[in-house]
Image 1: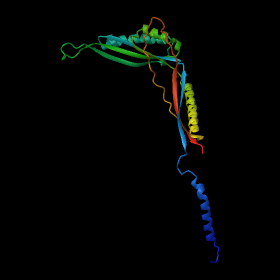
Image 2 (image 1 turned 45 degrees about the vertical axis):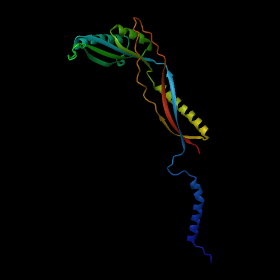
Image 3 (image 1 turned 60 degrees about the vertical axis):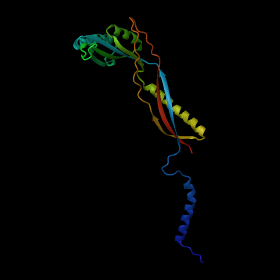
Image 4 (image 1 turned 180 degrees about the vertical axis):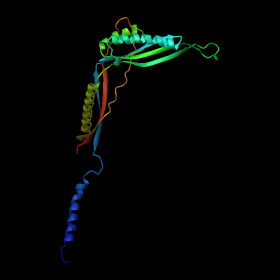
Length: 243
């Protein structure tokens, strides 16, 4: 067969050759749209700090035959408590009425169950939330409030006023914990960690203040101990597995 050369034939042969050599390399690349292999870990960070503020729940309860009389007596007692707290250095922004209730009292049912109970009097309760920013004054302020009319309920909680630095340190510890856990998993699996793909912070608002009941109300400064509070944060870190 006679040999002949044409530009079209040469171009087709060159295209076939380059395609043949390119196929193995393309086969080694990950499929389009498929994410790289990764490791996802959760890290926790916890910091314990001493509180620097006390929050008091103080309740004034008064009873009378009528709702008006009970409310008047309660208001007078609460005014005295508020005046004493302000005189002790508590700022107005640290005083807040958290609950006000007016409750009727009913007579006990007699032998005749068909008779409806009747109202025999009323009680009025007024609860005040007090932030004591000088922790050393909490016991004295509590004793003074009790002496002026606080006679029901009551509770105390010790908190940290500014949680910013505490939570920042807890987050740092959470990320460090995640890095350590990821390193352990990668070593156990025989792989190497690549770059960080994402970090997700699961920190939440600190839990609502839990009040402990005030059980001792003496005629002197009430002894109080603040102890320490622990604050915890959590993060999720996703790492790429290095090729």
